[in-house]
Image (cartoon, rainbow, N blue to C red; front, side, top):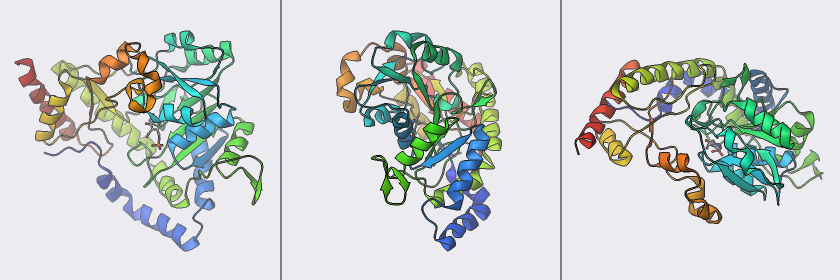
Length: 370
Ligand SMILES: Cc1ncc(COP(=O)(O)O)c(C=O)c1O
């Protein structure tokens, strides 16, 4: 059996009859930038998330950068970011001119809220909780620290479309929530795409200026903005796929429950699920010794796997200025050699889940006897 890491081809086959006419409508209308498909997506995604506003942008990275800028963050400021995240969280901070300040993860792989306060300096302007792997960071302590220190909260919800905390959707809890629609995401388009949701009219207004050359109206530019708009063909794809998001997330949760049971029985670490509604399993992450050998053996058995992420941000050449922090984030650094992401996509079958766990058991066995 072959089990891919994600299977966008099978998903496309299941929605092709709706996707093609939706794309064709855009082509026939010749409204390629902004227009009705983008308007519809923005209002439906705002409604889905329970926010007053949503603005489409060109990517998740751009969503984070623009949200930070809309909140007034820039050169000389600091933003607190987890050490265990995709580098784009930190790159977006750097792109505003501010500096990312890293905090270690807890046992749930999410930012350790208890370690945030010690990282705050007079320059700190915002906290960026990242709802990693599809699970919302427990937000109460984050909101309390932010309130105590007068900080803004920008949620990186790029891996957690539809996840919930306290009945609220990921992205709707802080000052702004940022999404990526990169193809492999729980809600993905067929290229790059992103969005910013907020309940704050002033933030939304600023975001709309920043994503569109700073234009108040055509050829009148109030500020130095970006060209960062969600394109209409991607919005048309998202309008079809948003209708399926909850069902797809439920399927992911069902697969995760099967994985949990089988991995626990086989003695592998089961990723902590804080609550069922809170987790939409963008990624299903376990840990193994000798991870790279295990991956090679899985691959021989037809099972694709991933690593999220192999090199923490402060150990990346791009962040050489943070290299002296080596050793300061022991949980993130320790896990980086052991993390293993198993195949996870809505269209998976129970037989595939079972096959992956059997293959993992067999891939680890030679190591245990080594
Ligand atoms: C946690 C996180 N933040 C930010 C991003 C950036 O999104 P994009 O690739 O759309 O720029 C991603 C995904 O790539 C992500 O997983």
